[in-house]
Image (cartoon, rainbow, N blue to C red; front, side, top):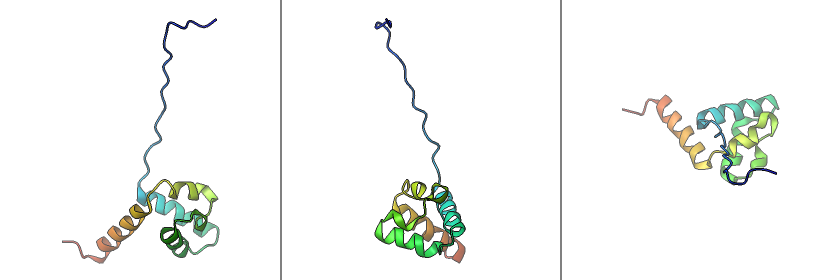
Length: 88
């Protein structure tokens, strides 16, 4: 019988955090590989919240669902502003 006087210790390893830009890149690549228009599909997901706009290929659907849709819009807008040279 097990010794019940000692407490067992259990440690859960945290998943490494993935950046929003990395998620977008991986999802974009997965959609392209499957022959979808990645811009249309990502916009469909952001507007509707329906994850079926994103392929499950290469775990893209699971990845994009780990990020809030508002964060996706923020990342895309931030990059657009940066590449447009609008920043001071």
